[in-house]
Length: 372
Image (cartoon, rainbow, N blue to C red; front, side, top):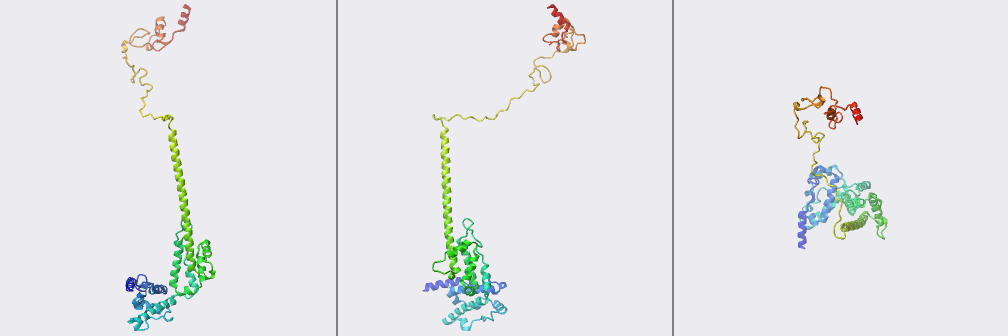
């Protein structure tokens, strides 16, 4: 028993109630009925969960500033509704005895409940509007394949509804019937399939009018979990089949490569001769001779190779027999006798060549024919 009490005191020492009007979560520039109701609902939940914290705390003087209380009670109808601004007596505030301590703890819960009721909207239409603002699938994961909703989407949606119910308090719990709230939840479903799952999973013996969103959403989450598991199983099977096909294809390619390797060898164990590709000439090509590169017996300067050109004074003309010029440059008339014709019209003259001194006259041909 003492160990449980020590553990509770340790929890109380760590857990604390934020001061309304003087904290990061509830700063003075955010004072309103909405934030005050939110603070009251969260504080009531903490005090109900941790009785030791409720007994140790003097809520009205330690967890809300006097300025915040003055603004809220003067500018709203909290005072008209009879919500007190102080403890019923100094004895209850001090809580020196066990009876006064219990009275102060009970007063805290009652006071916070009155604040929630006074700050909460008193119309059902406002509650419906607040519920419809919560959209199913906000921050949705999109499912395994990106086309389906998952269990986490239902958890997010239900968590937002629970938070709204805690903020609104009793009006949301008692102001609307279960059927009205369940219809709001069904309209929030983005697909007809989700709505059908809610209706089809209704337990046997439970009338549709007795169903509620607190019961329907957990059923929907379980069904989506089953669908998610089936999708994962289908993906695993598909992946296994793909891997099997891939292994089979790799095995076939390996067998074909081995078969081609065996076919590359002749029965005697020697590789057959394969046609080689024509190799590109790697050595530089030989120098090609030009038209006057010396193959005609002349050098590039115009002279003949291996023979020296005679001086002009040593040249004897075949036409006149004098030296100093060639027969084709002879100024004297060309000879027509047999000697000149023989020298000038022979093979070297070419029938009037450049060195023989011209063509053989027709009269000579006729004369030679007659002699023959």
